[in-house]
Length: 370
Image (cartoon, rainbow, N blue to C red):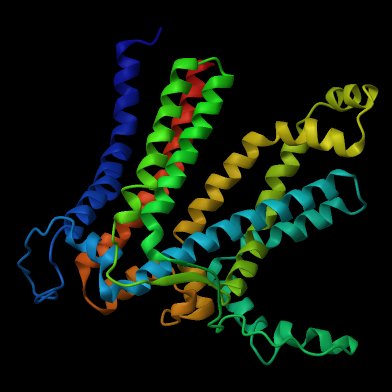
């Protein structure tokens, strides 16, 4: 057993880190939350001692329902679409590369280094390189001409075309459906795990969410006018650059996972008559599930707070490729609306927390069970 002296020494060793963490992380988070509920920026924002008034959630209400904050709402849509495409692209490309390298190809060390090299670059360097490559009159667009094909006519970073458009008025209905689906998934998991009471409770919550969605939610008027948003095709170039940089990281994760699968499991599956695809589908992929979730969390966190890559590739004033982090920069440091900029930062913090906190809770529970 540890003595009292050892515990005091351990506390003394970690105390400076805890103090710095409390001040420079949670203290600044609290300060940002306080500023987001003030009116800093509506008056003399750059005064030495600005007079702040508490306005509650007014800044958040304006962001989601205000007439002048349509760009922020489009930025949210851009961020969600970018996150889905970026995470999905990295997972698919990384898994494909890891599977190919797992076959024992010649020069595996060389290819592994080549695939990992983009990860060593900063997003600033990556954005600069790909901005040159995606110029409308050069770069990728002229590659087909080298083999006698017509050039590509696509404005990678300047297109104004949108796909998958939907009305912002439908946000309450969409949130209700997502809540119901989440409850259904939890009910299914608890039912399979033997927690019948929890499963029934989750099913009841799902039914209540659906009932609210198709009754009260349809009557909520978020805006006094229809406002359509969609995925801007200009973000395609940013997605390509981001996947190019981070797919090597997911490849390394998947390759380590594949190398960690015991050969005895593969041999047993082959003896049972499994084909290559059945071995991959029913043995290897299920064992890679923890790695997949870890990659989703890490890549999702990177996507939600993306700023530098978008800033360098398309600039801060290109609304078609803008994301909330860029909007926060423009609002706070160009427009001097510090309270609204802080509100955008709090929204980003909430989105990242929704992604990371459940993962951390499940991880701690699994470690406690062990």
